[in-house]
Image 1 (spheres, rainbow, N blue to C red):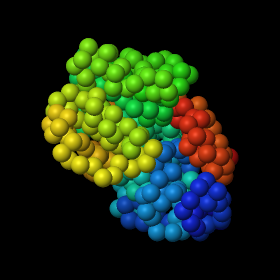
Image 2 (image 1 turned 30 degrees about the horizontal axis):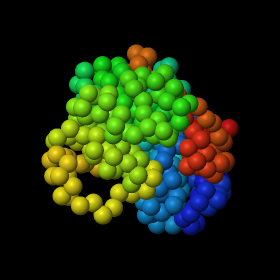
Image 3 (image 1 turned 120 degrees about the vertical axis):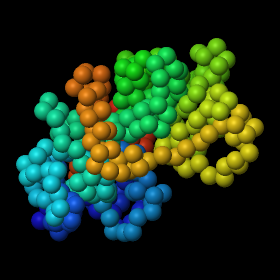
Image 4 (image 1 turned 135 degrees about the horizontal axis):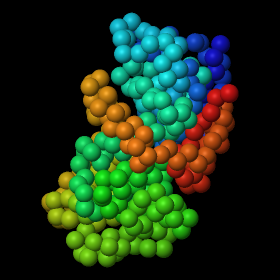
Length: 324
């Protein structure tokens, strides 16, 4: 029997257990993937704690890469033996995972399993943020929170490739250097600097047309205060907790602002959309503009240790869970 991380209750990292499970069978429209590497993402914490409710028991993990070992009925876009990466479902912390074919993409030659597991969810997230939610333009200045994280470092690189000036927020001097090394135009160390004051200084008072915020509760109003009139606040995560109790009048008072809460699934809703997004991402990778930035590795059965490091802000770039 294959093994997988399972949760019988929600809570801290200790609730994750490596256990034998029934071998999954691919249903209609699904492929069965033998995982070779799994990506760690903050959304995994949300499902572990129950912030994003899910019926128990359940697994964890939305991002992985491996080989196709079986096909469900109706699948014509993949074949057994294909190298793939995927971003979807909730059982990636496992040796075998049945995933919807729509959430998977073929890995090009030259992109490893570890790179695929580190890039697909995070890279496709950056792609929809910068190219679809608010399509950035050459010469623009934008603000991106958590710029030294897995998503943030990809955003730094991609923004630089597009000729966009990305101001990144970080929580330490070391993370500031990391973000700058990956293409951030400027960085703000939140441990010693005011984000709003520095954005005003860096933009000579103009502020920014868009803020990308995965932090949530702790940065919500700060993000709004960094926007130009009619600017867009893109809230795509809750690392500090969810934003609640929002008075819509604040958007008017601060300059007729817009707020959106996008998710990747709505930008990958058809095979054509998924293919276009993957081609865009891997085009950037193969051109050398974007790389995976894998800075931590844990065995998948040690996922609890990986979660502790992630929540303690001890990680930078991407973290990969490996399978022997």
